[in-house]
Image 1 (cartoon, rainbow, N blue to C red):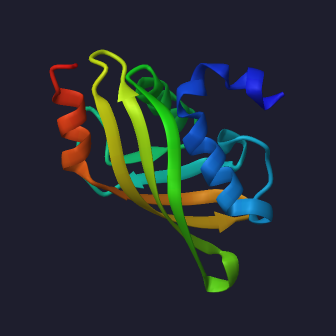
Image 2 (tube, helix red, strand yellow; image 1 turned 60 degrees about the horizontal axis):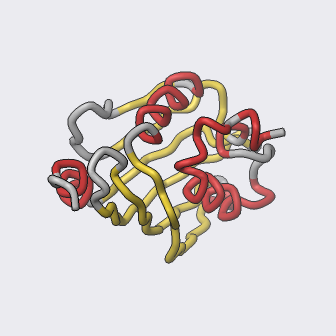
Length: 144
């Protein structure tokens, strides 16, 4: 079952659930990591210390998300706006995340725009935009 298989990633569950719901029957798989292609290219178009610009493959993506969930716990992901293009092959997701930086207890609120390309019922390519300053401010805050 996906919930046990990916239990270590529970702090990001609201994000994974939102993406899975947003893509609906365009992809196959129960959990976020099940709906990404083995050779996914996950590109982030922002500079953030410690996060690479391009992640290649499911294994590398999972390792990077492991670092994410070791540092941030999400409580909610909302304000989803979905745009479908190219006959459903491309889906643009706009959303906000709300969480806590685990080391300091600082609030983490951010906005994202993700462009998802689907091939063979899996996410083949992901391009991500976020408010880098919001992330930086949350991760460098001194805490409560």
